Every structure is written in structure tokens, then in C-alpha cells.
Amino acid sequence: QEPGQEDLVEFLKENGVRVIASLPCYSETNVDQQRGSGVFERSIAALLALNEAGYAVPGSGLHLDLVYNPLGAFLPPEQTKLEAQYKSQLADNFGILFDALFTMTNMPIKRFADFLHRRGELQDYMELLVRNFNAGTIESVMCVDTVSVRWDGKVFDCDFNQQLGYGMGKDLTVFDVESLEELQKHEIRTDNHCFGCTAGMGSS
Image (tube, one colour):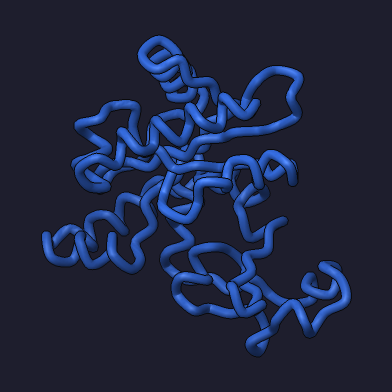
């Protein structure tokens, strides 16, 4: 665990928090290449600690999900098949259990957009997302039934709009509303990055 976070697992367990953890691959080489040296080893240690606390153990009521995103400018594979591979590899090699795998398309914003721009690949990636637009994903995208809340209480339609500073309404905060139903009158704010959630099989 990180310094100062030694009691985090116990805190999560006591409060029944559902953990969704990012693990872009089950290969140490690929993860460290994307996230930095030693990240994979620390990630495995954290997942084992969560399992030891009861997370993903049948009947415990403690849920542990993982998130995959591609290592480059391409779409993620089909979620169900990749989940089976993750479960097999992590169980066989490390004894790790988890409940579900969510595949996430890399959004053409912030650091990833800068990366693509430097390589001259941003336009090609946007065209890839647009070509693979899938109308069947619209009903299940994050912004339809989820609200993202920043540390200061400001609300956003999704995590990606939060990163871009695209607030809901006129800088609406949780202190301005009595219930989630009040947010339904606000139109969802969209932009080019939204194609990332609607390409291919969709982005969970």
C-alpha cells in the first residue's frame, strides 16, 4: 500500500465500497510500459490485499471490478472474451479473483490527445471512432444514468467532461439540488470525445 494509506483496504471493506480498479493488461511488461516501472507489481499486491479482505470472494458482498483500456490508438476487443482471459491469467499466475472487467476506449482528450497529436495520429484516431459509431450503445453510455462529482461538489455528465471542465448547467453543484431528478432537465453536454463511448462495442 501507499504510505499513509495502510488502512485503506479495511476502510473500504467496513463501508462496503465497490472497488473499480484500472489494470490495462495482465502482462507486467505492457502495464509498466504504459504506467511506469513497478506499477504492475504494486497493482498485483493491491489486488491480493483486496482478495484477502474478502473482495470478489463469493458470498462476501464485496465487489471488485477491473478496467481495461488499449495501449494505443485502437479500439478495445470484445468485453466478454477479454474478461475470460483476464480471469484465467490472473487466477493462474497470481491467484487473484475479481468480479467483472470493463473495457474502456481511450478518449481523445488531455494526455492521450496530446500523445496522438505529437505522433500525427489524432485525426486518424478520431476518424476510427467515427467510422465505428454504434447507435446501439447510446442507451448505456455513462452520461445517461451516472453523475460525476468533483471534489468541490461541482457536477458533470461524465468523468470525461469533468476532466475537460464541461460542467452541468451553469456550474451546478451538489449543493444546488435536492435530488438527482432535478438534474434530468439539463441537456447532456456533448463534444467530439463522445465518439469514444459510442465506438465499436461501446465503452462501459
